[in-house]
Structures are given as structure tokens and as C-alpha cells.
Figure 1 (cartoon, one colour):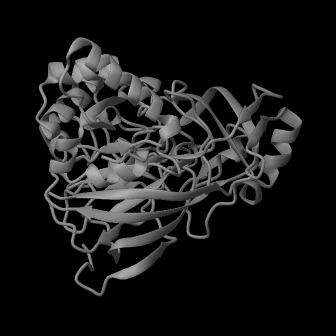
Figure 2 (tube, helix red, strand yellow):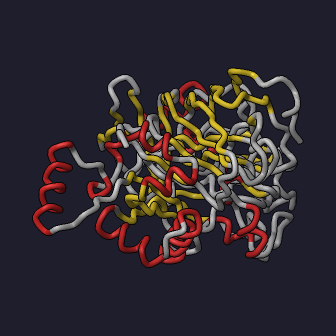
Figure 3 (cartoon, one colour):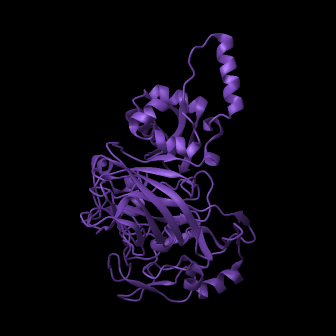
Length: 439
């Protein structure tokens, strides 16, 4: 449902969330004007929603916003202007499931082992692994455990963080909501309540980014499963969000990327699969290397400001990313004037008449495995650009890279693409602006 026929607004602020589900059933805010701005505060993703049994997805993303003029078959560019972490502390780690406390998928269909209630309301009693209790019968009901976990305190101003020992973790857990800084409308429990502290005294850089951002799928599905790898758990699942592989491929928009270069200064270009696009965001991380190899990173509350731009007629299956220049893999970074001059001398030396004008572009691929995700990213790039898959592979090899965004199956396929192709797609101006290209 959307109110996109109302007057477009230059700025839309979002402070409400969808309790784990993305799809057409969510009413849209806005519409925001083409060229307008979204200002969005988001709760943490992953662990907080995971230990909150009523959630039917692994995140708590923002209520979607309609974009004026965005129709099915278009694309929407999200220009990330500003991003800040608001949590003072969080907790994360490697997970395991508790048997008997879910139906097929503990992210989607949690189950009270005592009274049998599916997705029961719950509350926090005390701290530690046994802190989450069913409102219906009072039994301990958390479907997840840490196999190795940590509590980490954050200093947004200086860009550093530090894991803490058990005594400090217990103190933070006693005031979990105060340190988590959950938005007022958030409904999740704070993961700080579990106070798991296996790593103490480890300092880490902060570099916030959004792990789940994009446009509304054309069918309701759990927000954490809006990708080819996590989405695979929906195929023939024993709960209400089950679907076929064909339906998943058709409806998802791959918003759940966990790609650490989706941060302030980047431009994310997303498919429009429902009228108005329905832009949503969430799952901010305070930091993460290439590949969310632990299964989870440092989920935090945060604030993001971004501008939107409709790109008419650019039909996409999944996202395209224009990374910050300093996030590009080295082989994809545009050459300096001195390097261009050297290339021109090299061309003259060997009699090469033309030198391609090009710019960097990154296609997101997802699938059950990293190999599947790589094939998906290459195929998407070939379909959109008109280049052959083999040429994409060659270009990614000598002018780009294929990088892991998440295990088990999200990757970035980056390469230098001819400018005439980018212009034909309606992306040339964005690429020139992003990378300071003159032609």
C-alpha cells in the first residue's frame, strides 16, 4: 500500500519500523520527491530481533518510503550523505540454534518450547543466556546462543571501539536500553542483556555502514532473507513465508547485502519492483571487514541521511553500487592525469589508435554459495551492460575485483565499464560525478 499519489515532499523523516517483514503489505510513507532527502533513524539488526521471539525476520528495518515517479522497471539511486552510530555499546558473535524453539528457521518462526506459542510476545528478566521469557507462560524462550560472543563499547567521535570483560558487560546489561540507545518505536530486546564476554580488551576501528538497504520486494518476506543466500532458507520452508526458488528470484531485491562499502559517500542503485519503490534501510554495523565471516558483525542503532534519484527505464534484478573512490579495489581506481598521459604514450609507441573511456561500477551478486553469488553478479552485469559474461570476467580480472560481502553468498563484482554503455544506461552522469571523470 502506498500514498505515492499525494504531494511529493522534499524531506521525509522516518522513525517507524516493520517488525521483521518487508513487502507490499507495509504501508509506505511519503512520497519523497525525486531528488529529495530521507532522514532515517534505525534500530540494530540481527541479534536484537533474533532474541525477540515475535519478530519474523532477523532485522528491524525502517518503514518504506515511496519515491515520486518511481515505477516498476525503473531504478532508484540512493546517495548516502551522512551516517552516524548512536549506540554507546552493542554485543555480537558467532551463533548457534536451540533445538525445539523454532519451526524450520529460528529467524522467522520462533516457538516457545513450553506452551507451543509461535512467535510469542516476550520480556527480559535479569541478564545472561536465560534472560528472554515468554509472556504467555513465563518459560525461557530464546532460540539462539552465542558460541563465542563479545560486548563492545563505541566512541563515534573518535572512531574507535573496545571489547570489555565480564564485569563491565554485566554492568552494561543491567542498563541495556540506556547503552543500546534504541529508537523510541523500536520493539526489539537489546542484545546487551545477554552479557556474553569471551573477548576482552580488543580495540577496533569504527567504519559504519548499512547492512540492509534498498527497495521493497514484490512479495512479503522476512527482511533478513531479502537476498539469495539467506533467502534460500525460504524455499519449501515449513512456515507462512515459504516460497519456491523461482518466486524468490522474481520478488527479492537483495537489500540484505552486508557490504561494508555501502557507507557515507557511496551511491546505491536499486531495482523498483513495486510502484513507488518503497525505500527502506536498517542493520547498521559499527564496523566489518570484507566478508561478514562470523555470521554477524556489530549491530548498532544509527542515523542516516540520503538523497534519492529516479532513473527511468533502468530495469535491474539486483543492486548496483558506486563505491567511494577510496573503497574501490585498486585495479578499478581511475587513473591520474600522469597515468593517462603514460597510457597515451604507450598507445603511440605500439600504434594503438583508440583508448577506451570508462568508469568503475560494482554489481552485487547473491546466491546459496559464494560461487553461486559470483555467477549471479557476473550474469547481472552482462545482462545490464550487454557485455558478454566472459568479457565481464576479463574486465573484473584486470580492471577490478570480485570481493566477499558476506558468507555464505553475497559478493561484489567490480570492473571498468565503457562510458558509452554507462551513458546508455542513464548512469554516466552519476559515475562522472562520483569519480571526478571529465569524459
